[in-house]
Image 1: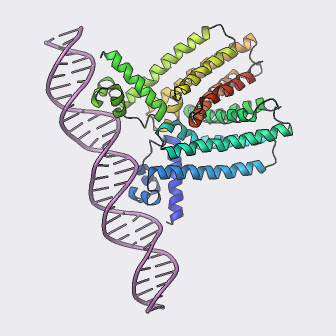
Image 2: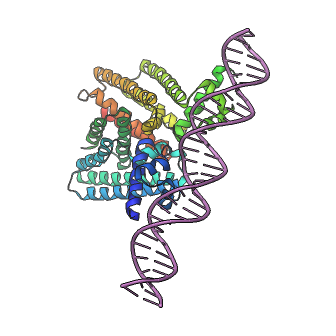
Length: 189
Length: 189
DNA sequence: GATTGACAACCTACCAGTTGGTAGGTAAAA
DNA sequence: TTTTACCTACCAACTGGTAGGTTGTCAATC
């Protein structure tokens, strides 16, 4: 296998492990079994678990940012954009996976500082996008003018992360969308 | 030390560990250090980590249910009750702790089935209380009659769990209350 | 076009430290 | 005299990580 194939496979399997059992609970041995190379060989691609963890967040964030940019360009009203944003979470849950940074945030105190910083950064990127989307929604008149975009962004992110967590625990992904819809409706004019 | 003292101390320290680093990441060695008895002695009180985990949830739920009952009896309108409910989460975050079952839910796939069931049960208890509170709010006229209490309960729980997660990751507990207030306002008449 | 050297990708074999858990003993309380 | 609460001393299994060797690919050199 080429470098990129293996590296990509490692990242993909590691992500899936983190999003189900958490960062602390997954091991190089698990990963080795899934990807089909020896435990020691993983260290060739990612010298430490921390470096793997960081690469994981970086690659996830990169993908997510690309999706957000695409979403920004679609001709949708604010409501439509927010619902489409929420679908990222719904889709993850359907695949029986927690949102990555939600899963990581829960064990934050255990994470090495470099990873903690990245999780925080990840959330700020999301909040920025939401805030901007809401702000332009206020200008275009389809979001209530009386609310602070900053706070509303926090509300949308919180609801989706929380709904994912609850849906995950109840093993019922269908609970996310109604929650999101309710929030989005309450923000719209 | 008496049985109860030690047992209580073990539960308290274990809870604090789970709520910060997660279930997978804390060990009997950590606990031994904090409580001041040898690692092996912990097994006298809790033969397995699973039994400790289960006792943890049980005791947490018991306390929480008592608080919920007290809250139900207070002479508050629905809004007041929901805000007071939210304060449990705010208080936890102030002490730099995640909500217990939020922390556990994130690593759910790693938990033994007996614990998974308890986490699920815990959320259902919360949803029941919220639903009932909202239902009586509809009757008394201070909650919008058009919304389904079942869905609204899910929304409130999700928002609080999510807001806790985000606040925890951003190390800023002040973000919870505005999110809750926004949701509660959107449910009120 | 064959030979060489460098390097990437993997391997086996190992390491010290930690994990949850057990066996069996002691001292004190009931 | 039995039971409770704790102890020391151990265990196999697993943790992330290292050392050093083998193999295949690929480019520069003869």
